[in-house]
Amino acid sequence: MKQNLIFDTHSHYDDEAFDSDRDILLRELEEKGIGNVVSVGADMVSSQAALSLAESYDFIYAALGVHPSETAGLAEKDMNWIREHAGHEKVVAIGEFGLDYHWQDPPAEVQRKWFLRQIELAKEVKLPIIIHSRDAAEETMSILSQTRAYDCGGVIHCYSYSPEMAKEYTEMGFYIGVGGVVTFKNAKKLVRTVEEIPIESLVLETDCPYLAPEPNRGKRNDSSQLIYVAEKIAELKGMPVQEVIRITTGNAERLYHLNGGKGNAGNNEGF
Image (cartoon, rainbow, N blue to C red):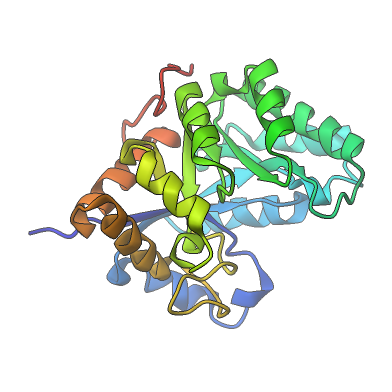
């Protein structure tokens, strides 16, 4: 039986952690069970690098955007660059962007300004969004709801809030991004979320080189480690690992409108 390939919906392969062996690692991913990968921008430099990687490897796609912690120096010319490149055939999303109040640096009003601006841009270019939200549960939900950002479709990356809020997001049409954290012993909320949310609303992600799953927690992460995440979800859902991989890969293709995949997990029909 043909093996289903895992889709890594969120990676950072431009990171310096991969400088010594990036090409070797990437070219070995398929034999390790990995299909498509999305390399996600966190600032303007990494957005440009993500696009460069997508142009260099058939199986890599790019997301362009600016993480809330990197918004202090942003200018409208940066939004113009993202807009100009959003139509590239390998660009599949705007992100990651959102709110991160763990450190509140830059200040909340700066993060909020660029959160709203990138939602506006995503609507303009008609691409799904990758939302980063940390210690900002209620405000993130409020902004996404009030701006009808769900019209874009998208994913709540590295989900860390309650199962109840996850249900609200899936009803809005968002996918829930699940990575290595679900294998951690202290990940009780995420485990409950995975148990309670339909698998049709889940996508797999590494956030590599960060957040490696058990048994490699604390080491450099890469897409091949997603097998441990798939196994944990299979355990929680009481279903075969290959079925988890098949369904979440299909979800990812719908999220990013690849291979004929269109539409969102919830009731919203997107564009």
